[in-house]
Image 1 (tube, rainbow, N blue to C red):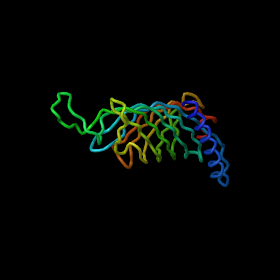
Image 2: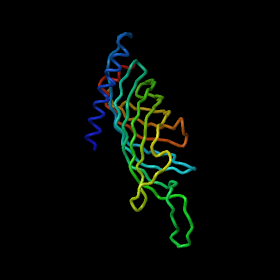
Image 3: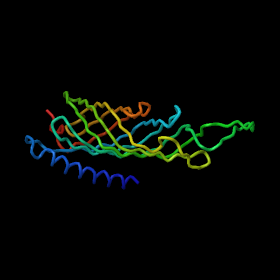
Image 4: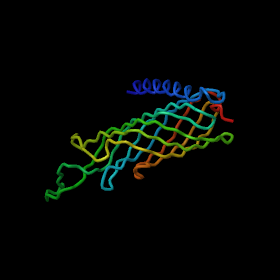
Length: 206
């Protein structure tokens, strides 16, 4: 699975480079570059009726600047989730009293794919950025007995606004912190740490 994701990321990165080259072809001369990131995230997904699942994910993300302070990118997330969600199935309490429980303990896999655009500024060894991302996420949830759970919003589109701060450890290596919240559902949220390798010094930023 990691190998497949790496291959997909490489293909997406190549596509982003072609898009950026076309976007900047008629603009002022620009020192073309790109960068790739890998990171670990904590994510929260709203399901329904005030319930949510949380989990951890790994993110692979290629980026391409299209100007001194603007960039585009793509993301692939994969990870796991757990929590309690509403279920159509009928669950009875362990006391045998016949009480119906409207939720079920759920665990499962998580995946997401997104496109993004960001604006950033560098201040010495730090850079700050705001991002807008749009894409799809999927949650394959099961109960304690391995039965699939159909949960509202387990598979849906998403829009996310983010803020991030990166520390330039060297001209080509960054360590960053990122936090985002859903624009279509404010109960959806992500936060994490990212490690980036840049193919040009400071991505050409002054």
